[in-house]
Image (cartoon, rainbow, N blue to C red):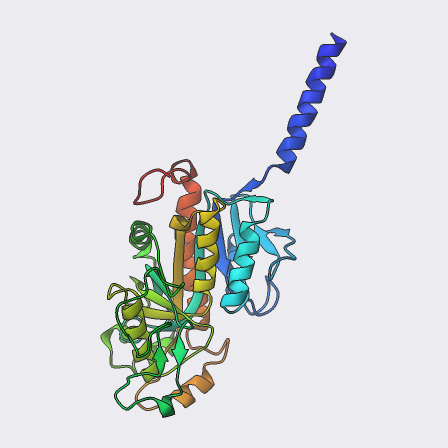
Amino acid sequence: MRVRILFLLTALFAVSLFAKDRPIPIKVVVVTMFERGADTGDQPGELQYWVEREKLDRVIPFPQGYHDLRMNGDGVLAVLTGVGTAKAASTIMALGMDPRFDLTKAYWIVAGIAGIDPADGSLGSAAWAEWVVDGDIGYEIDAREIPKDWKTGFVPLRKSVPYELPLMVPNNGEAYHLNAALVDWAFRLTKDVPLTDSEAMQRERALYSSPNAQRPPFVLKGDTLSSSTFWHGKLMDEWANDWVKYHTGGQGNYVTTGMEDTGTLQSLTFLSNAGKADVNRVLVLRTASDYDSPTGSMTAAESLARNKIGQYTGYLPALDAAWRVGRTVVAEIVKNWAQYRTTIPGSGPR
């Protein structure tokens, strides 16, 4: 009898020890890029509303990444990557290889602010991307030295003139095509989410001639250009539209400009190849804090000078929209985890 009891106690101890060391299963990873100060209680960056409103009270040390992680009891984990593709790529790779977490079934939602093309959207609007295109990989000649018949001095990698065909296949990380069915599902789920408006945003959008730029904030589908260079102006907007069309074979439509997303997607692609994550479960949401080009009465330099962090006309509404739209998807996944753990919305079981 004593031998049996001793055996049972030993087995229970082994099971408890194993359970303690098992990776934490994560349902959703919220990816944010910058924070202005503390995680709570001051002027917010992209992380703060998630921490405060989703009760991400557990702080998990993360010295191998940019910033400590935040988590709640529902299996929602938030990571802050730092600004730029290099920090994003290294932080996401560090998280994906962290043995403390099981990310194999996790959904990843990038939720950050951006500039928006006034032809497509307005301040405070939220855009779900199907394509994420890199705006850094390529060759460049100063605009003052380009041939007269060139529209831009930016040339695709391994090409000799702008927008030279055929495209490189496979590409070098210039474009990532997200799971279209998942993106459509997220858009349908959130398209009627009410978004914050303000008198300041109303005044600014009235200065633009585009009907979409004049609309109150709304949810849309639109692709994002990821560039570590913060660019601005009408001619750069034209380049962004052409660059996205080129690298997506005409399928993509540039709407928002971010900075980190191709770094995040590159790491998630590698992690997916290694069985550590599933790149088919990735969503990218960018919300408009500013227009990417000025009104007709202002120069690009004048417009850029006033677009300092925290001084964007749509800064706080855009942060709110990133949480408000993103958390609608998070809440649905968490609520119905038994279904979404094995079946990606809009797709078959995985």
